[in-house]
Image 1: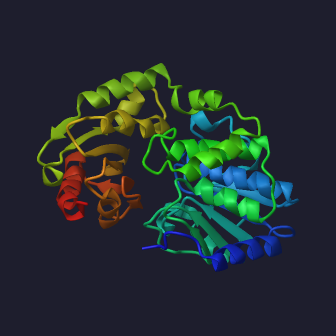
Image 2 (image 1 turned 120 degrees about the horizontal axis):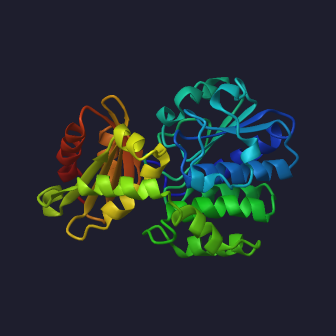
Length: 337
């Protein structure tokens, strides 16, 4: 288990490493495969901060298909993004965002060995402590909280572009400031970001309230096959559903639209645990887990090869959707809170 806060020695090491290696070196920023708002926003916000410091040889990337979800295509700093294949093979400095374990780095994992130094910014309690310098705060609502503090310690002032990236990241991982990790610290940070001139309503509509008509029809199909299991999780109950690649093709949708499926599923009043199983390939599924408080789903995810937070986690499953859900159900009773 990672410490719940970051030691001053780690902050000092991170600042020293960035100041020594970034100005004259090649800097590679990396987030996880299939990046969400926190991963992209934290990475791009920090990248813009480094650019303000005068860093010139700077790239941002992520493993897998070079595809940005539509809600994030307006983020500042996208010009710094390069496909995985074009990323520096041996950067002087590697900075990793929102990645709990090396497996989430995909084909970029080798940069941990070839980089001169690696700094990891994260907020997952399941973080495996890979890399050299660890800025991992399990109490932070988003990785952007860690990124903002590191920028502050590097004496990088906030501007509207940096703030927009960090705000998108913060809003994403707090569910638009609805989730349990929405603390006074979160609202204080949001206030600092908004004070740069952001329009929160515009950002919220773009991130949360804009979806293709085909995605709505797709959601209807997937929600229609949801199943309720009231005896799971020690009687706290579980609801689950699944989406296939065929569903995406039928409705002409990109995979990122499925990320929002967990939200209507988790609203089911009769259960504590919600599960959405999304097909990645033949017999391979991305699994999203949510809990309302009776189950530590990060423990479930870790047991099944993934990670996350107490109330929100995920892993990659194999077999049929039924096989995956059976594996989840077997773990639920072991991780009651």
